[in-house]
Image 1 (cartoon, rainbow, N blue to C red):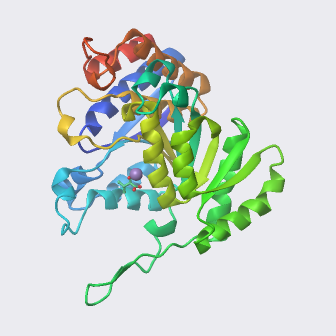
Image 2: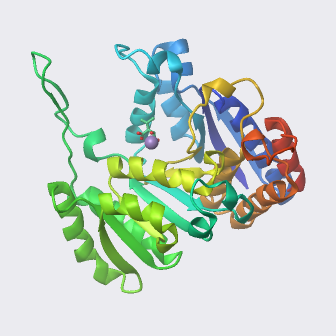
Length: 353
Ligand code: IPM
Ligand code: MN
C-alpha cells in the first residue's frame, strides 16, 4: 500500500529523531511491501525563524493532504526565557491541534521489564504498570475565551469551557479504548468544585449503560495524582480534560524510567498526528545522542492507526530487541556500558525489521 506521511520535525533534537523513525519506516516498507511518501514542513521555532509564523498555512496544507503526521518536538530556549515574545513556538502546536481537529491525545504508559529498575519509584510498585491516558486536547482552559488581563494589568482570567458534544466524543473514544484493553475506565475530574467537571460526570453516567462491559469509576484529579504514584498498576484507561491531562501525563511519564521511551498519538475525525512525549531537548541538539525510541514507537502507533498491525508489532519487537541487547542511548545505559549514538540505535532497529 501507499501512504503519504507529513514530516514535521520541529526544533531541537526533532530532526534527528524523526530521521531515525523514517529509517525504520522505510525498512518496514521494504519488508512488507509498502511505500511511504514523505513531505516535510516547518513548525515551531524553526517555522518562526523562516516565516514569522509557528504554524504556517503551507504546513497546514501539507498535514491536510497526508494520511498521517509524524511530529518531532517544538520549543527553543530563546523563547522560554523571553516572556515578552509575542509569537511563541507553543502557539504553533495549539493552532495545529485546533485546526486539524486533534481532539484526543493518547498517551500509553507501559513499563519495560528490563527498564523498571530505572524508575524513580520502587520496582515493586511500577512493575506491570500498563495504562493509557486519554487527554481531551482541543477544549477546556487552553482554548476557552475570554482569556486575558484587565486594563490595569492587575487581574488575569482564563475560562474553562466544555460542550456536551466535546465531552461525548472524547468519552466515546475512551470507552472504546477500554474495550480494546482491560475494560476499565477511570474518569478523572474535579466535580466537587468545577462546573465543567460536573457536566463530564453527568454525561459519563448517561453513556455508561451503552458500554456494560466496561467498568467505569470516577476519581478526583488530586486523588488521581496520588494514586498514579502509589499504585499505577490499578489503572487501565484514564480519561480527563485538557489541563488535568497535561499535568497527569507528565507525572505518569516518569514512572517508566525514561521519558525517552514514550510515544503518543493525537487523533481527530480526519487527521492524526504522532509524536514522542518528550520535548525538544535543546542541549542535545545536533550531538547525535538523543534517544530516538519514543519517536520510533510513535511511528509504530502511526502504523497501527493506518491499519498496519503486524508492521506495528514488528517495530515494537525491534525496539525491545535493542533494549535487551543494550543498543541504547546514554539515557538508558547501565554503569560502565558504552552508549550508542542516535543513528546507531536507529540503524540497529531498522536492521532487525
Ligand atoms: C504537551 C505540552 C504542550 C501542552 C505545550 C508545549 C503547549 O506540554 O504537549 O503536553 O501543554 O499541551
Ligand atoms: Mn505537557
